[in-house]
Image (cartoon, rainbow over all chains, first blue to last red; front, side):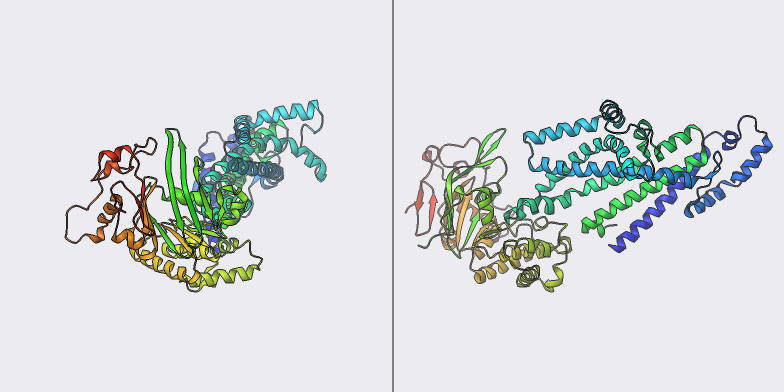
Length: 314
Length: 322
């Protein structure tokens, strides 16, 4: 297992380096000069040149990439020229909010989706299985910003049970938790259906396998068979899905963040792209890339922990 | 005669399919005496596996027992509830399956799986592991105690089949059902596994119901043999009866088709011409009529009666002398 982890982490580092180089090149080829954006329309060519030197944009491209990589490795993402604060500081401040939101959304979706999927598989083709199926497909089909808007209208505006916007006073745990409920509900709802369908499908497949028949032939209790013998195998595709899912959510939770006016990394990327704040775009994208790779690395490692065959394959 | 361990009477099993009802088993009578090995032979699709699924009631969802009685140690299994039946599975009846590569859970250690099946015994985990290791050693797996922590994919096919046999015997069953346990193995391993089973059967004195389509294996291992064809038990008797005095034309053809009895080199292997009849719309009369060399008009009209040819020997054919 340790050997697997070392190899998997090594692979993750390589992926991050390649991704960062690609990102940097992409920003580089995009038309538009960051210096003219920062300095505004009345800047003289001398001022632009000066800023280029300051930002290191006058050096050869390869040197720029290598020095950027070096800085990233030290946790230095450069300076935001608008606010004159380090990019890392801005990004990490937003990151907390996003991570809490994404993890809360996925956690409740998992806690509900996995049992629903198991239930559907065990009681396949019954009325309640079909009901779960219709519910799942329904919530998958509804976009999360629609859920966000309607739940905001209903729970925050009509019923006034929960706060409508913001992330709550920092440091006040209860207030923050109350602010988290609606966005997490909006993001997680589709995932409940997604996870339930996936678990049902892989569970049905596993329950038909020979070793489950053999376990039944030995009279093992049905709960042992479903939760220990079958689920451990049936959960593997879901873990993989969640790995990429969480990674993707970090940057795509933006809809819910905009609707509920929450700070977050998705919103940060959105805002900084609109305002052409290159260092901030770069920093936020690099961080979310690293998190994406981290999240798939973690899910792969969980898979390896569950399945000995995966451990020996990489 | 002592009470048989397994007593199947007039068993009929149907499968409901979109095309119609498949009468997979029809009027099966079969007894398994205590501490004896009963073999079932027949080509693929003749109902061997359906028969054992019906016994332990692990049938496909579209299958149901249309008629008949299955008695185990004198108890009527048909009257058992699902949970009562679960109480018998893995305690009084255990099974060895066909494909050892898929018969073990790939993500649990052998030890865990062997400990789990002893869940009814009030022993400590350590004791259960020791028992499991002893049984593994008994089936020829060396260094058993440490191999308990291995996963199935770390064993070869032959080893895995030894493990499933060890598991089946670990619960000290009164009846062991083996569903083609050697079919997925190569010839050398097959011989080893058969010897092992024979050896263990002498030790443990359990009855075995052994399914195979391999005649030599049946002859080697079994005391009694039943020959199945298209869902019917066409002939049954002792090994000697079946192999030396076969009555039913199908049994004879089957024996002639065994490649190991061919003496002179030949370009063509002997086969039985024709196909198994559709089990959805059964022909009237004898089930074997279309492939039988000696078919007569009566065979197409009336189903043949079971004719007693000896103390244990019966066959279903119109043209047999008692």
